[in-house]
Image 1: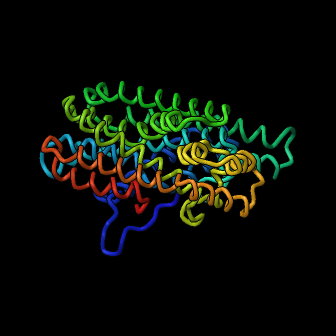
Image 2: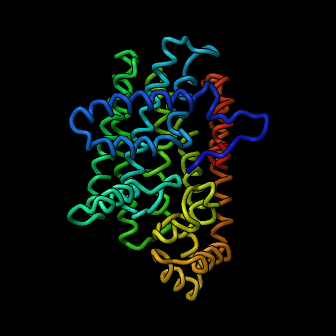
Image 3: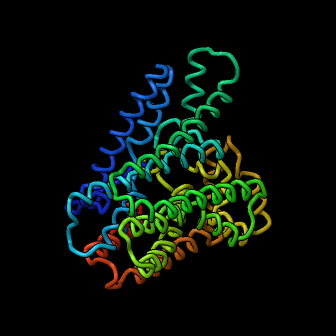
Length: 369
């Protein structure tokens, strides 16, 4: 989703410490190195780098931000020495390659057409196949190429972390956290796939998907990774869980709301695209639980229809609103945000980082980044 501007006169919390610019520099360096390596194998590999360059040119940089400030929050002093600050930022940037892997594979599983206002990776490679009139199915080629590109991103994420320049002791502490983070992400992806196959169900099951597919991987585990890099005490990691887990859930609930009601200019996806893809979100679970028989029949008819037109999108939006699902989701977001903010009010966290955490929390749940 394209980043929105901060209010006039106020810097976005995602740009404090020049975070987005510095993360992009690391990304560009890695892509240049890997492009050289791949094209030395064969120039036909260049489209892989081009696809990834386009994908990684934008984004909110949520995960690097929480990792970096998780590291800063566990340190004493307002400003860390440059000799450890730059490696910490590079280590945080590794999460953008993990995120790219997740996005590419998620789009394959969901059958998404677009990502950040551009063709999704599997569509991009299908178009490449089609434009050259190659043999076989363009769609099958696109899926295969996208899966391989996602795998490559997963490999590079590990490489970026381990070559970030952080001390060996810090990397040894961080690696088990990173491994657990990736396992939880893949587990969450499978639970999401399973939920779609089952046709959705309880709010509790939908929230379980939110927790493992998004909440832990987006905020809690990046915070834990930063804490591990800093050599923080277990108490700090506990605080980060109490702060990060509810905030991660609120972040995903906001994403679910935007997936149905968001402006395409801001989301980078067509209006109601989550409805066409049939995503069994918490929002849909609440609406289904509260729906009348006629409303439930309409949900079952329209949800997951790839040809759903704007009138069908409007009908589902109206049902979500009329059942109170939208209001309930907004109340959940507000409650989770409040719980998160209370958890971070502690002297155990660097005060400069606490200020940024508060701003990040508001930005992540309003999408004003």
